[in-house]
Picture 1 (spheres, chains in turn green, brown):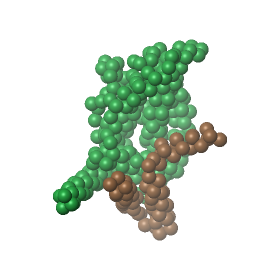
Picture 2: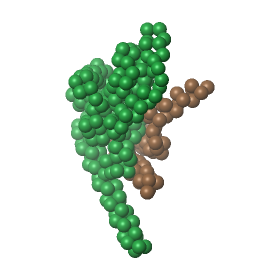
Picture 3: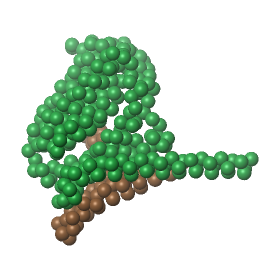
Picture 4: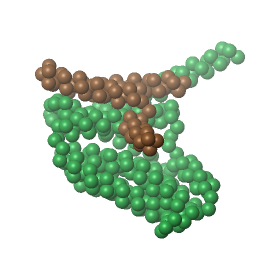
Length: 257
Length: 68
């Protein structure tokens, strides 16, 4: 398979995570102190690189059938989780993730955390920890996607390129704007990533069970649009359910009054 | 012990998320697919996509009926 779909999928998934990490880093840097924030961010990136460096070569050595079964199952479950949240957000059943309010929450917490505590080379331990945790936790999702996609395609390098480009783009925009990227259409991106993760997970999981897909790899070109159409169908279905229940409760109100 | 518990909770939340039944359906569907292929000699490529769509619909239905 061409490396481009792999790079693009990892890129979009990583942009979403990088935007969330950027919000936390900006809150720590702008309200506390930039030096400790960068130290925390760098420490988290070193840990994430070490995880990829240690696990990347190992997972590519595993037998492909077993790898596809395990990774397919994990990706399908993980992708369905993303897709479920994206559909619920698109239909108003779950609040949209708002970077501006997430930023305000972090800023309030950082301001009320008290005076800077210096330990060793870190002059503000709170800023260091906040940046470290934010980048590490968001980055773990990136590592998961890079390793699962990269290992299955026997091309961890291409997946790393997609992730690195995403981090560079978001960091560049963040430095230029110096504000949380509230205008990024996060839910639409999560919806797309959920579709890709679910499609690839289903494809690889079934292959790992011994299935031969009609047309082999070409069936992915059918599976991705089918998952998209079904997911959009679910969005339409939930919107109509919400609409009919809203009009039913409105008419009940009229009857009661 | 507390560290182990929070480590496990992190990975559970990370992979499984809000609805464990979706993960359960996917695992059962993979098991059934393997049974079809290896014991029944049926190339059941259609089974996992059907179960994935069903699991998503079932999970959404329950999430929205709880929300109302």
